[in-house]
Length: 200
Image (cartoon, rainbow, N blue to C red; front, side, top):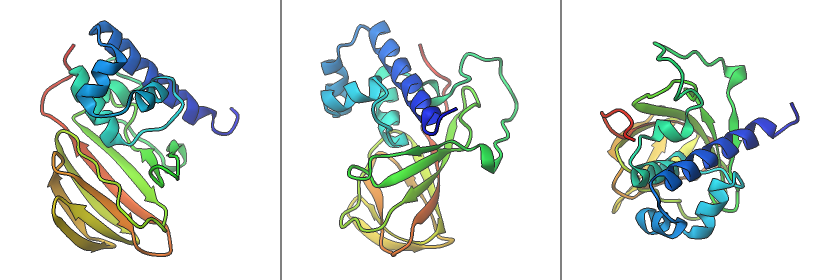
């Protein structure tokens, strides 16, 4: 498989699911834009698999469509239930973001587990950004610094997080981190958006 084809296939699959769900609910792109506070241009690119989106952005879209996040990102949503999914390090799919927009990369850790309540991933943030990118999405979130140093903003609060530090938070409050070191920042992030199964 050519380099980057796995990533583009995943983005295309996620985009197609979003478009299909939007059409099922008879929503126009403008309706989804108003519900998520995301631009029509960005939503169009997401639906057409042209860009990768942070989990937090996909969570906003999922909430607007009335489904769990796993419905958008899981390849195995329609498969029979399974008790576990083992992902070897060498098999992780690293999704590259647009550095000019987010300056981060993401590895999904349980993409093939259908109907899960948590969405775990490893984030890599490049250095050099002067302001954090803030996200707001439904549910709760836990972040652990695996490598590097991060300036983390949560609402009106700002604090420094170093290797081994963790935070558990209400994700409906604006939050986000900035790499303040010269080396790559590596984080483990787990999002839990609801205790309900997907709704259709």
